[in-house]
Length: 421
Image 1: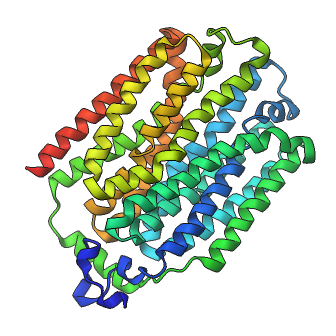
Image 2: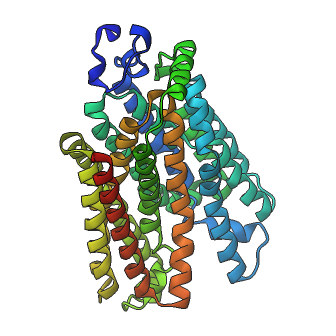
Image 3: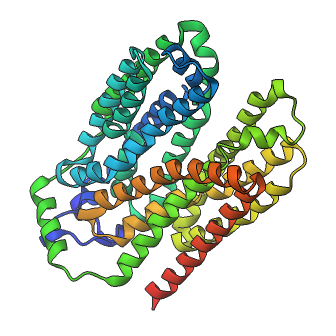
């Protein structure tokens, strides 16, 4: 069946009359999407659930002063994203050579082992090192983007990537909620063992249910043909703009993280309720994104990824500005929720456009670079927001982020016009 399907469905040219990778896996992509969404949800729940008790665990490991606890907590939290940013292109390249499913299995098993080892750390150095290793060997959600992005038919890829993004966003939202009560039941160290077991369940589901038809010889031929083909300059500009956009999405979303509690305190929230209120405000953005990620991905399928990317960047930039002028915490939460709804369309649309812009044999590697850019933004965002908030002012964090988003929209429009010409 798949060998007879016309290649125009995917925008790919089969090698010497043979079916492309997407055509060979046309019967599996819906099942693989369901498993990958479940796996992305469970792994990100396990990774993010330590947020509420991370400072307590750092204190248990021997750190005494309050300032040192805050510093080591931030380092330990960011280490995982740094590790993923470093290795995502490598795993994407290996996915092109050896298949997408092995990368999913590798990520899930590696994260399950390392997550359990974090529960046995004896010092804060070991905690940071293990969190870094979790990022280096893990990245299940990133590997899922590579698989779904290359298997899904072109006309459904925006919607599918939106569904996958919803699973990841839901995991990031549920994780801190689980982390708020689970240590009271099993202890802080026991929480990491539970997280490891949950990721092991995702690994088992991946091994049993994910299907992939990967022809190493045929795909190697496709890579050689792609190398021999002349390069297109506008394609390079397009990929550069998409990488910048991916980084900006997470940078914009995370830039407020270091200042959120202090900013809410200036809005008159009592000190005893700061932590809970800050958690609600942070969750508002993820909740808004959950509502619209799949819908905006489907919109990209209908009207084109470029229009959705530029529209979402401008809308997010516009919603960032009034956050600097709020007088009540619920106003900030409402605006963050709306911002989450607009920013949710960016990652699926960007991944869809990358899927169409590069040769199939390079798709995994390029999507790996895309994931690396996203996690770089997740590391850089809090650093930029913290420095601007400390040296310039809290409101200026929103102004600077809005300006960067608007500039990114202008860059995408310029590349879009240049590519069209």
